[in-house]
Image 1 (cartoon, rainbow, N blue to C red):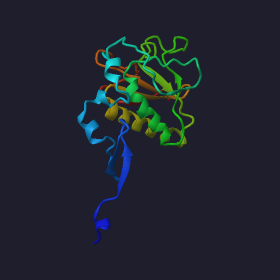
Image 2 (cartoon, rainbow, N blue to C red):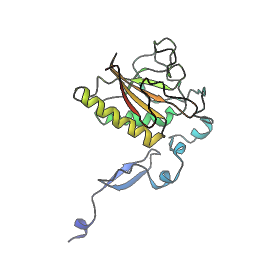
Image 3 (cartoon, rainbow, N blue to C red):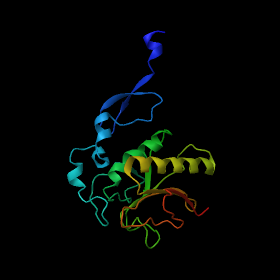
Image 4 (cartoon, rainbow, N blue to C red):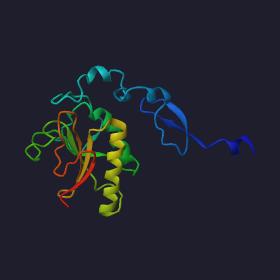
Length: 198
């Protein structure tokens, strides 16, 4: 056997910190060695992240931290809990994998119509367009939502929830830190993806 046949196929990947590293093609590793040793909050892409999100996750903390997601129009407000700074790359990547852009249709704007106790009004939720995803019907959207919830929990922590809403179809992504409870009708502890209004 030649050396080429013995060694596994490698590929170069880019970490969230923008560092390039090598990993086997079949590996699910997407963090460089340095980031893998850091606490989760250190994965943000700018060096001032820790200072800017001091107190992130505490109820009512809202800072304009420049969430890098596309809005459907200028009426959509992205003044959100600082935890969305970590979630934005995960959301963008999920849609990019299907060759489309992640579009926020509703954020924290007061003019939108949500339920009375909606997490949108507490700056902890966004609604995302799903009709642009080239997945097949409801089953494809359910699979996509399940995978999105897993990716958010693995990358950003256990307080993320994804709801596939059938009334005015969209994905609702909600952050419910300790001291809050997800504003989801069928909420159960340990479950991170739901279908609502089917």
